[in-house]
Amino acid sequence: MKNELTRLFIEQFQTSPQVIVRSPGRVNIIGEHADYNNGFVLPAAIDKAAYIAISLRADDEIHLCAVDLKENFSTNIHNLKPIGDVSWSNYILGSAAQFVKKGISLKGFNALLTSDVPIGAGLSSSAAVECATVFALDYLLRTGYERIEMVSMAQKAEHEYAGVMCGIMDQFASMMGKANQVIKLDCRSLSYQYVPFKLDGIKILLLNTNVKHSLASSEYNTRRAECEKAIELIKPHHPSVASLRDATVEMLDQYVLPVNELVYRRSRFVVDEMERLNDACKYLEQNDIASMGECMFETHEGLSSQYEVSCKELDFLVNFVKDRPEVIGARMMGGGFGGCTINLVQENAIAQLISEIKPAYEAAMNLPLDFYIASIENGTEIL
Ligand code: GLA
Image 1: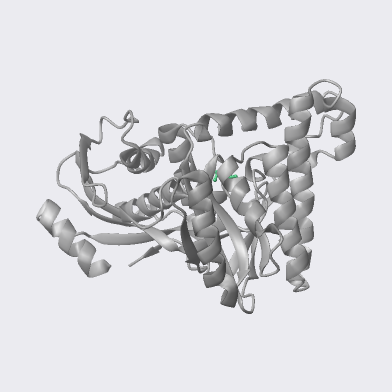
Image 2: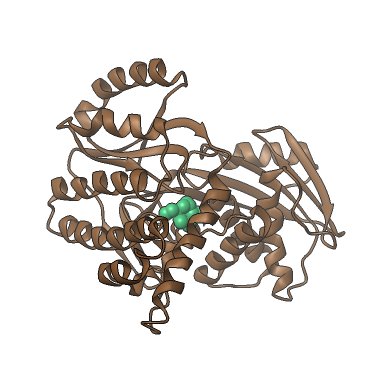
């Protein structure tokens, strides 16, 4: 990868890259739509990643090249702003802009991007690019930020340049991931713990619906607002409740349900999901994988019927595997409205499962089904 990227970089910019950074996509075992509600999540970095090669320039110009898309974009450091629909460059520019906002004097740069994180698959391809860019620029500008600071810069790039008011999970997992470990992250305090995730004979199988729903970002922001609405309804009675992390089912029953049934369903899912994550972590510690898998199925049910961020393609895939003993757990993953399901599957049964589910999905949905067996890898690093 390093040699190939160096070669492409020289071909594009007639100079060598000064740094090449790899930053991975992520999976999340359980704890969905919990991060922006200050709850816990259980993500991990995977073996699919974005790679960015960068060198600083002597002038103020910024030249970007996305190798896979065969697209280029140029601007300069005085003109940093989100661009209409050239989304990949927004992730890079948004990340660079965070340095300027911190008062760092940014320099012009050339950057070449490639990625094997499938786009729109719920594997955080955008967080991977943001983390890679922030990490590379931190190195080149010698700003020496802590990783945790860079996580927050990458998250702000997504807020400000992609317009998605995402939580902290994706950027955290990409930047902080460790091989064979999932991260139990408290999104309120940002304290975290690595939990070994080596399940004998079981693999993480990702099934990609290939649905990229255009509603994803607007509905995401709507869900966030709905959760905030629940807090508004509870707060007058319990002033110390700052987020759904502090809310109980009793509070929701008493103050939300009578006023707004939709907001009740949304917030009820979140409060239940926080409880489920706790249970799932306990089961994981006890090596009771079957019970952990049950929690995943329950999460899917909640995301589909209460939080309403699933779609018929995701539901099809989860329903198909639900009663198969070789599938320990499955659910839709990430923001929703398309992308992948995450499945914990007995390794020796994967080939047979694929040979059945692929034609069934393709015939029923008239879309191709892609699949990946994900391994858990280290987070952002210099190559
Ligand atoms: C997206 C967001 C994350 C998180 C998930 C849902 O991936 O970027 O911050 O909210 O959706 O759990």
